[in-house]
Length: 205
Image 1 (cartoon, rainbow, N blue to C red):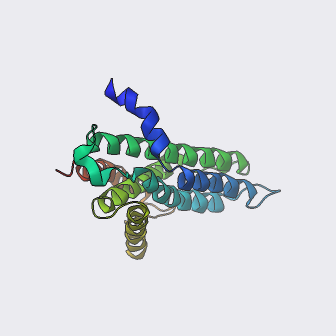
Image 2: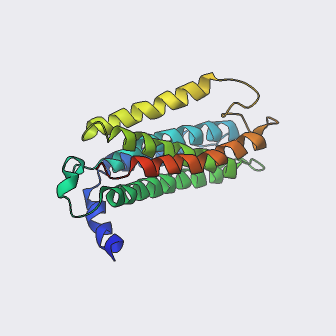
Image 3: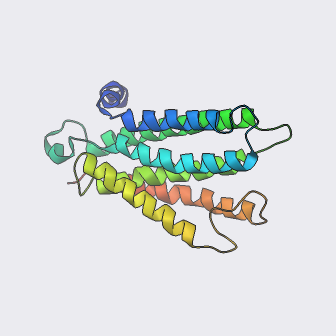
């Protein structure tokens, strides 16, 4: 099967350094901050949110395909290569976030809890938007420039969402009354972002 045959060469072609460094940084941060004592719930919450954005940005580097400029000569459709790259980037970014989350939960004080499900949805959307931003940028730029443009796009989206305060602010805290409603909204964002990612990954011809 073509997809299985492509897994190894695509995995070798991906620039894993940004994602690996960011993933290790995430694990180290939740391990060393407030070392020697329990990790405060608020600190863990803030760190994991920040890591969702960081890993989304790093995942975008996995999308960059140096063969884009020669798609016409490539034996494998661009959309297939891009979906495999997005799959690798999203999978490993999610894995690193999960590891950091597990470390944070293990370090919480007795009785301390995190709303992991809602936070995981936030991280998933951030990672998907990071992949989308890099994929869109990859249609206009080549190489690292596309990844950096995608990083800029993600940061703009996050910055705008931070400024737009209100009762349904996307970055509510767990003890606020609209937490559940807002996270239904986060979950509802995921399908259109993935659909847009599919559009951005289509063949250029």
